[in-house]
Image (tube, rainbow, N blue to C red; front, side, top):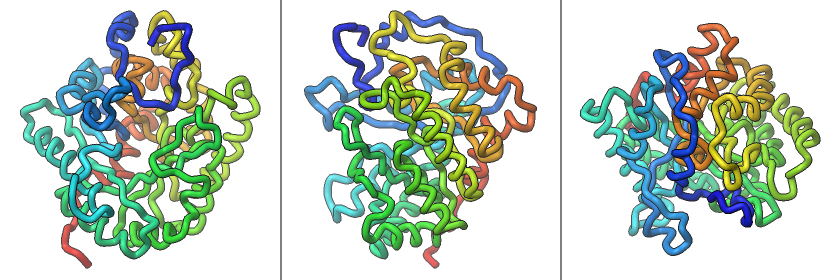
Length: 363
């Protein structure tokens, strides 16, 4: 990963370079008693599904806890879909239910208390093909049952760019949220009181804005600070891109049914070239590079509609879990106690309804 003769593969999920990460400074934990709900992380075992290319690796409960148990007070987490442990057989549209079954098992292990106080995957966000229209409804019900009261909603990866160097989301298309059947499937999602995690690049934010306006009662969560791109054809255009992104985010913030996650910037914003840096950046350096984007989100959405996310293990390509949350704490060091509560736990708990289970009886 530190080979300077190669371009850093931004936008790709790779195993972290543990030896390189070990070169980073072991920082004291800032504000260690501040409760954290990690609003976005993954769990997977890709060693067999991605053979031979160096990208497959294991990140399960013990691996995640090794990161969370490094000093910050992580009280609960939200798992976000990542094409993990789909069913090998059965109807194609129902195979993603296997991911919720897998994560709910891990959540049950965590809830036993035998793995520490953190409630891992207290909320579970899965994937359902909403372009199925009305046929998405029975899949959503199967997800709710499989989640045992923890299933909270769906993420749909619409992140697409014409340049292959960017790396598009699974099944993404230029107008993913406007495709035939999607609006019907989205309506079924909303009728069940489920949330929608949007994931598009900054060039596509108009799709999320349109969706939020058409469905003002929908609970929409915009991931990764709106998907700002900073590599490939976007490198060297920071000022132009920031201005365009801010304009779109301002329009999105006008939709009161939308909240935004602060994080997920390592691989797409590409403010730090982790493939060529001699050592991992410190939390001060991270905070300096990310602050303009995070502070803009806070200015536009307010603390009660913003939440921090680790996006681990993806962000582990750049830094440790301890350093990441220190950076977040530095960015909002001047916020009030109430604002910090919202940003680090309150907003995520409310948006993902972590204080209550779901009624599993069909309507």
